[in-house]
Length: 112
Image (cartoon, rainbow, N blue to C red; front, side):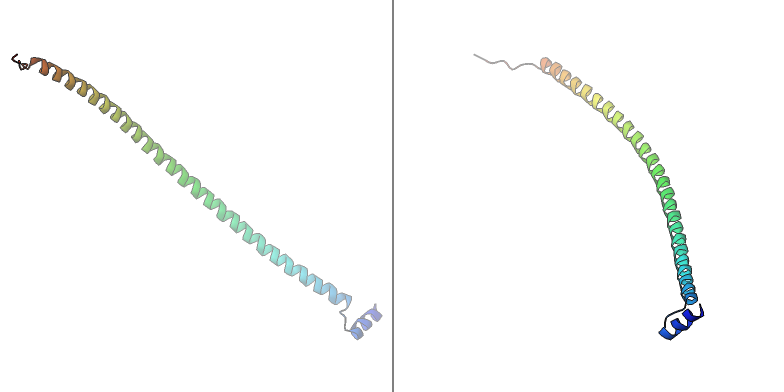
């Protein structure tokens, strides 16, 4: 082993111990980076889940609003139908009254 260290020093190469230490530092740095990425991913997942909860809450609120507007629209449609029926009945009554009025008017007589 001693000869390897001398040879590595003479050639300018790192010793096996130096290579192991360097490899250990690289692995530690990679572990730190992966830990940071994992923490960031967890924060992102938490943020997305919060956005989902907010969206579901707004969706439920909007669905309630639409139900209210739907019931108002149904009431208005019923009111329109009632008014249309009433208007049609009034028109028929007007036509009948005009016919009665026309029958009551004296007709001009023509002289021949």
